[in-house]
Amino acid sequence: METQKSAATGDLLTLPVTTEHLRFTRALTTALEQSHLGYRFISYTKMHPNNENLHQLTNMFIQYLGQSLH
Image 1: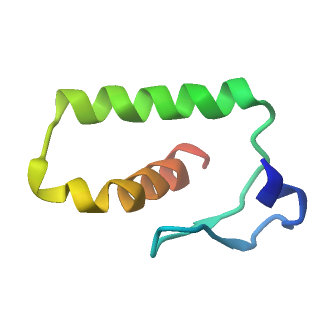
Image 2: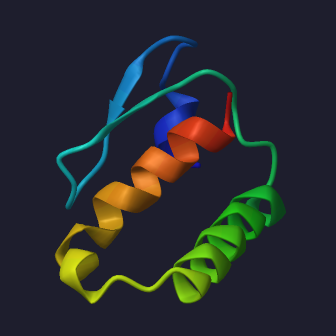
């Protein structure tokens, strides 16, 4: 939420602890929307576990956000 306050639409956001970037296409309107996206990602990873990619979980979440926010 804090990062999006200083971003303009179309900016690439660099997030800590990840090598992925997130293109800022629209603002997340509420913390509820953010938590809902997080819950859906966790549900997906539980249904499709892959222990080989645990170290990439943060990057996978950023990729998921990028796809979900379009």
